[in-house]
Structure formats: structure tokens, C-alpha cells
Image (cartoon, rainbow, N blue to C red; front, side):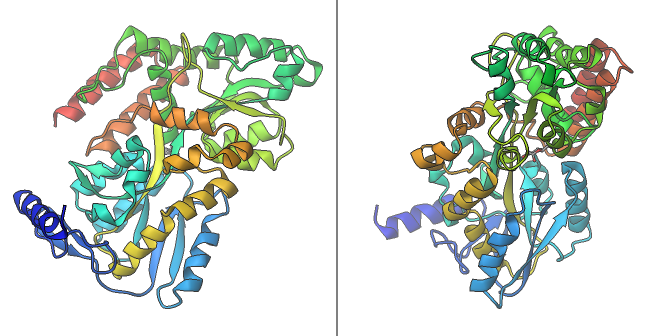
Length: 433
Ligand code: GLC
């Protein structure tokens, strides 16, 4: 296709879509721009900006920002760290948007917030051609889209993994990690017969009442063959399959497979417990790998796919994308920084130094990286088969309803059947709006 025909096709598509654009097919650099509804967004203005994300538990983000700042002394990026839990991050970002503040420029947006932020026009639509999306895993790119438009660029992906004490399993005569929940409990009983493991707990995930619970609840439901919402987005959680999933968690709390204190666990609490030798199995994200290797259990653990009811389970699709606040200044700088931060080079740095899941397909197929991170093929599968959480504009209300009912069941204040019945009713109300 010649450049002229491409440009013509490009403007025809854009006019048909009702978009007023100033540059189509540009490299998306400082002059690149794209539309958002009927408005045009011009990525102009250069100068200092901010990058806003949850607290950096990996300690690597500032290094990449320092690299940028060294190269761009007049367009420095200041890193604003928000709390570790996703719900507080969302609240603070929404507050910033509602007051139309320019304090936040580039947002590290949880993959589940794209629709909500895009629909409210809190973030700008981005030029698709500014980023090498074709080199990224497809389901990961989808998380950055809303109604076909690109509103963010994948930064890091996330897939749930089962961390296990390979040293103890081996000592107990177990040759491969469990594929099902019942195998996991049986393995645990064998491990606990070892004198050094008698005080250990079997399993933990994230069960505090926050986004992590939505993830763990959804994974349990999906791993038992149920769904929270069906393929068309309709809630369908009051089913025998979903009950089996929720019951795995409820029963595990009741019989002590999951220790009582795990009802307060977020990601970091579980990581600390695993690293200090309190847990045989842990459900967590890839970032734990690099940190745990440097801990007292370094070399004594391995990673497997999440277990399920009758076979391997499925993960919720997690991760963070970079989005541009609609109210920010210096958008030309912001777009360049987003390209830099989401580049394959940065993703490779984050993988090598913080074991973050890269969005780039080829980083999973690199033999030298697989040597450092032998779980990469498992992670790639986990991401490719992960189930997205509901893609809805009112995601905040949907996740609060899930958190509330799942927490009621896990803490024993409601039966699992009642919790699922109430959740189904809540979700029906929310999605009918
Ligand atoms: C991780 C995931 C994110 C998820 C959160 C829940 O940060 O990347 O998608 O919402 O954990 O705690």
C-alpha cells in the first residue's frame, strides 16, 4: 500500500468514526495525535511530568525513571507512589480526575479500570501506531482498549501462579506439583509430617476485602468451571460450579488449610509469610519470584500453574497499563515517556530485575531468560488463558459487590450459597443500569 492510499484509508476510517484528528499514521511522537469522541487530543507541551503508580515493591521503577531523567533534563519525571492496594490507588486517581487536577500525568492503570476511565474521559485516547502492539500478547493489548479505541499501553502483565516449597515437597517424596486442590491438600498433609514443616500452614492467597479478593474469588470460581459473568457480560455466578469454587476457599479457612490470619492478607503479607517459611503453597503474582529468590527460601521454591477442582485452574488476568490523564500538561513529553517506559528494553529490564511479566511475546521465548526464570512458559500460558474480570464502566461498584459477598462467605458471616445468591442479585442490578 502506498503512503497516499494508506493516508486516504486512514482519514476515511477516522471520519466515519466521527473522529477529528490532526495527524494520522504519524509515528505518534510529539506531533502524533488521536481523537476521543468528537474532540481532538493534541499531544503538545514539553516539560516536567509525573508518573503515578502504586507503591513500588520491586524497587526498580525509579531506576528506569532516572534513566529517562538523565536523557531529558528539561522533561523530568517525578514518581508519585500511591498505596499498595488497588482500591486506594483507584480512589486517588479518580479524585485527581474529578477535580481536573494536572498533578498526575501518566497513570499506571490496573487493567480492570480501562473502561471506567475511558468512558468518563479521564484518560486520553492514544494513537495506536505509537506503540509496537503487534509484538505484544493479544489478551494483554485487549485490556488497554475501550470500544475498539486504544486508551493505554501495556506496561506489565500479570498472571496468578502457584509458588510452592519444592525442597519440602521433594523431601516428602512428592515428585510434581499439585494440579488440583485436593492434590494440594494431600501434598500438604505429607509435607507437614516432616519435622521442619509441622508448624507450617498449607496455603494462602489474597483474602482481605479489596481487589485482591475479587481476583482470588474469581479464580476459585473459574477454576471450578464457573463464571462470574458469562461471555456476553451477563452475571451468572449463582451456580453449582461457582459454589464449588467458593467452597474450596470457605472450607479451607474452616479446616485450617488456609491460616486464619490470611483473611487480612494482601499480596505483600502472603509474600512475607511464604518467605519466612510459614507457608507450603502461595498464590501470588510473578513479582514475588525475584524477591523470594533473595530471601531465606531462595532456591527452595518453584512455580506451577494454579490448581483447580478437576485439573489445572485458571488465573484472572492482571497487570498495569500506562494511560495519559486528560487533565495533564506536557502531553508531548508524556507520550514519549510512555513509549520509553513501555518499550521492550524497559520490559526486559523489569523482567530481569523484578520478575515482572512482560507484555512482549518474544521475551517469553528467549532461552537465556527462561534459564533465569524457568517459570516463564507457565506464566505465558497463565496469561494467554487468563479470564478477564468484568469489563464494565461501573467496575468500582462491581468489584465492591464481589469483595463484600466473598468476604462475608470467607469470614463465616454468610453461607456460600447465600453469598452467591446475593452477589448475583447485586451484579444484575449493577449491569442493568
Ligand atoms: C495485581 C494485578 C492487578 C490486580 C491486583 C489485585 O497488581 O496486576 O491486576 O487488580 O494485583 O490486588
